Amino acid sequence: MAAAPSRPRNAAATREAILNSAIRNFARAGYDGVGVREIAGAAGVTAMLVNRYFGSKEKLFAEAVEASFAPPVFVAENSDAIARDVATALVTRSAGDTDDLAPFLIMLRSASNPIAIDIVRDAIERHVGKRLAGQLPQPGRQLRSAVALSVISGMLLMRRVVGARALTGRNTDQLVELLEAVFDTIIDTPLS
Image 1 (tube, rainbow, N blue to C red):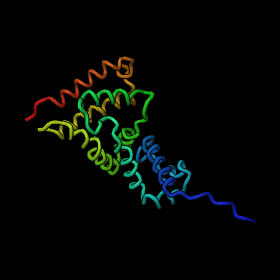
Image 2 (image 1 turned 90 degrees about the horizontal axis):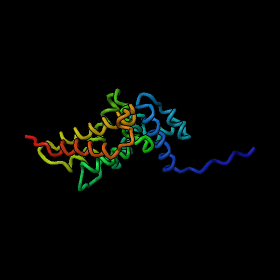
Image 3 (image 1 turned 45 degrees about the vertical axis):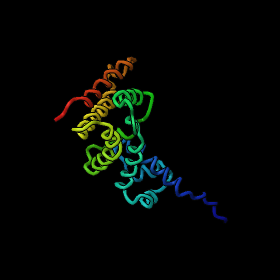
Image 4 (image 1 turned 135 degrees about the vertical axis):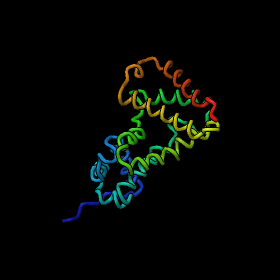
C-alpha cells in the first residue's frame, strides 16, 4: 500500500500559525488558562512542534506578547498633537465593534502570573511606553507616561470589558474631548 502524500512543509507559515494561535488563546484565557496542547491544536500542529519552534510555553508567551505590543495602536511614533491623537485612537479602537484588543486582554488575563506579568511589563516599557515617553516633557517623563498608560488601560477595561454605559454610548466626540483634556493635564502639569 502506498503512503499518503505528505503535505508540503513551510516552516515560516507553521511558526506564524502557532504564534497567531498563541496570541488568540492567551488573549482569550491568559497565561495560566491555556496550555501548549490547546495552542498547538488550534494551529493544527502537535505540542512537540510548538516546543521545537519556541522552546517552552514561557518563550512562546514572550514572543506572542512581543508581536502584540510592538505595533503602534494607541500611541503613534511621532505625533504633532499627542493628547488629541491618543484620545481619538483610544475611543476609535475601543469601540465594541473594532479590534479584539489582544495586547490588553493578554495583559489583563495574565496579570495573576508573576512570570507573565514581567514579560508584559517589559514589552509595554520597550514599545508603547518608550513611544509615549519620547513625546512627553521632562521632568517626570516616565511618570507622565505611566499615568497616561494607566488611563488607557482603565478606559479599555471600563469600555470594552465592563461595558460602562456612559462610555459605550453614542457620544464619542465628548469622550474624545474629555480624554484629550485628561491627557493634556498629564502632559502639561508642572512637576518639580
